[in-house]
Length: 388
Image (cartoon, rainbow, N blue to C red; front, side):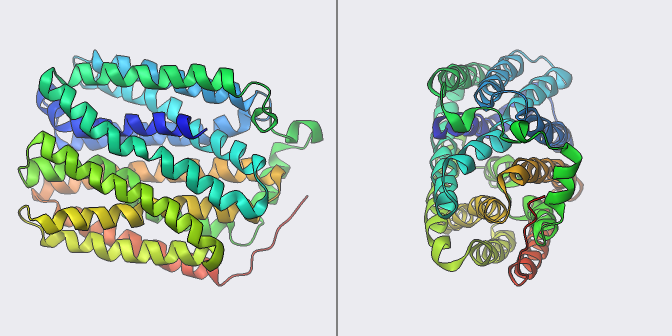
């Protein structure tokens, strides 16, 4: 399961190729934002579809197919000759990635008992983020020695191998079979109604709707390499190294904070992380040229920006029944990816409009602050579960 998540985050490293792709295909920041935003919208709505499909189809099969779709999307991107083809490949990959979170999270939460959910998710997501570290350096080296197209072709091979591995090695794993709701023959609408009645579910989903645009990993992954290369004028290899250091922070932060949350509580830890990250993002407005302190700054942002989502998911898993859980996770990821597309597109528009990244950093800090307040509100509400 961790290997499958690792493959997804190898694909995330494609963001270091965006400057070269933009130059090669004559794209603007707005077009880039539209591309990533369109992918987020489509893959976001597919999150709930993959989750509901797990009621009728083996999760192992769904996860394997998702990886194979990622591979096909990479091939299409590598052969793109224009904006439309590039979007097509990106959407194909995003559609495959959409299976990763709801289906993968369902397998993990069903496999481990309640007190181990946060650790299980932290390990899967934290080690999976290793792809964010390795991929940028590897892809930038290939882009320098060959070109960005060859780098995307390499990317296609990783989810291909992972998809085949998932189909083979998860065979016979009980938690990777169809969701247990099938045996209970419950109505989808009854499960949805039961899930949204849980007291803190709506607050948590509202919080992540703002957090994904503020302190969320998606916006950071998309625009950090562009900030380093196009705004601070750092070369591609140096950019990939700095970016990878920030991703190391994401890995460490997710694992460490996931472990500490067992003592502090998932929501309290998430609130502290989101609040701190909002301040750190606002401080990016002071960087108008490269200094060594920027490396440390981005590392700490990585530590605090990647971890909050797994903590929120662990909280939702702990307050829901197995019947409710797949529905909640599908809704969580659908909302998160859908809203993220709006923030990602708006970020690109602001950069184009003002010719500066500072308005984008300010917007993200404000969104993170709103998410912080919502998480604090949720942490002070006593969750109630409904098993109907």
